Length: 423
Ligand SMILES: Nc1ncnc2c1ncn2[C@@H]1O[C@H](COP(=O)(O)OS(=O)(=O)O)[C@@H](OP(=O)(O)O)[C@H]1O
Ligand SMILES: [Mg+2]
Ligand SMILES: [Mg+2]
Ligand SMILES: [Mg+2]
Image 1 (cartoon, rainbow, N blue to C red):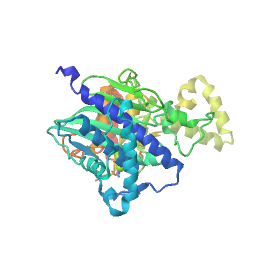
Image 2: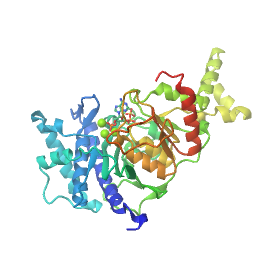
Image 3: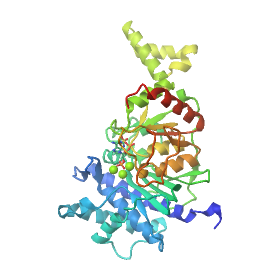
Image 4: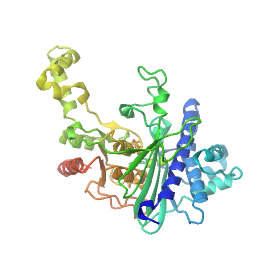
């Protein structure tokens, strides 16, 4: 097989599967939000898990095994079947079985086939359990986060379905489904559930239901995006796909910087310090300072600021659109935003002792890199996907950037800020 076609078949399959998984998630999320249900469970670490997490894992596992027939399919994935196998979980398991079968029945729409008869409970539990590979440096391993950003999912907000393939420890392809990726990038920062009615928009759900699937193959220098299919639209891959590229912005003061929503998942104060030291927040800080000065003098701050905006020499510095705040978004949608050019920087510094898992990053990393961006740890080294379930040897945190120039500046700022932080 020619090098340029390598992994073509696997990518084609993975894209179709992620489209199906996105459709499954959209249905479950709609039901979850419209009924006061008890369908959100807590895992041992208190993180949420839902019918969608298990159902996507079972669906992806069944489809990969079915369509990669003859291969011993190894899947490293987040969920296990323990909770579902308990005797008091019959209702939950029944809901997963229904959800998986409903999704698989739709396979022909995506150019795949359905099981000859609906899958039974034991087949579905087996499909979930099969995803218990621990990956490693030899052979092929699929890496799956069935629902990344489950917290965002249950809040009616951003989440992603992430599927990647590793061969001999190297990422070779990644597919990222982002069912709530809004049409306007500004809405990424917008909490969907808290703001059901958007100003000037009678049907806010249209904006959110757009959604996309992004994908890339290592070494092609290309990352692609395809809209989710809705209603009766036929699945056309790759015809409806378009290339995406990272943003050309190199000036940190113009960059949009994103980070996890929850303080528990990333140190917000460290990244705020970094952002300020790089000039990312100077506009915000400057504006706040002037606002305070004006109000201390008894002026109406907003009116005066608008006035100041019109002064030619201050115009560039204080105009309203320069109000840069971090974009806090759940899930690997942050990686998608950088690959699409909607943001320039993603920084995650988990608390010390937390070990990052490969499924939280694999698909996003290859898509950003092929779209022209850079992803490393805080020491500037590439992430190592060859050492099992965890990103072993990760130096402090993860820095994803739209390009080398910005990336170098951030690494420099990390070195400058680290000693004064108490991480
Ligand atoms: N303590 C801690 N520190 C760092 N990271 C953690 C931690 N706990 C969980 N996780 C992982 O974070 C994944 C969600 O990341 P997000 O960027 O979406 O976080 S946030 O919801 O926006 O705060 C989340 O992925 P999902 O479980 O797939 O949602 C976890 O794998
Ligand atoms: Mg995750
Ligand atoms: Mg998950
Ligand atoms: Mg989880």
